[in-house]
Length: 265
Image (cartoon, rainbow, N blue to C red):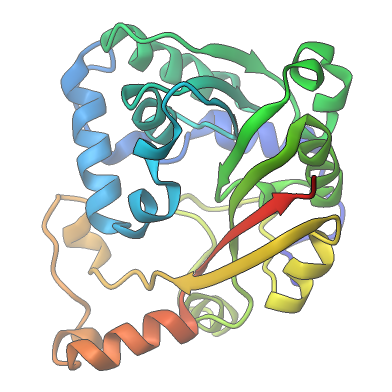
């Protein structure tokens, strides 16, 4: 399992995401407007179309969902729009504040908790509630101790409950580019922790769970300069690649490991 640094602190991680919450620049509109959250959602799911397929937002009406690392709330809102009972937690206070504003814009309800997911087993209301789904997309690999978060997820899930998480893939195009000095882990510089995983390491991390399913996908294909202006042009090396070849590359060298598992009855 690879990482940027061996021993950064949880405070380093919080400061990094408070400085620039993930996807916050997907729209330049006022964050007190519904249009801001609509633009963020549109860009996120256009660039990462596998997210709605993986999350299955429409599946969880009236179900209790805990999202670990809700960020500015795009996926949380998608669950809530489909009738789920959502609890949003995040280490970044700024991210959580923006997430809460989004729920207000849509007149939707959620529980918002500012906390470190390594310590959620100390929050008795979460443990006692027992969730049908714990969802976390691209978050756990930024923790100093991912195994603690997984242990806590197991505690708060009801028997037979689902786990859906995304972790970064070691065997990926992006990791090759990072290691070659052509890319970095996140949009902003200086991410203190970003671990990557092989499939075997995922299974080791989730040793308490059953029915583990891993799908690899997502190579970011767009030119960055134009992308920041909402102009979506493929990098030259992807532009003339046959679609079947590009699909195969996504499945073999994608950056995202989309993982589903079940807490045993």
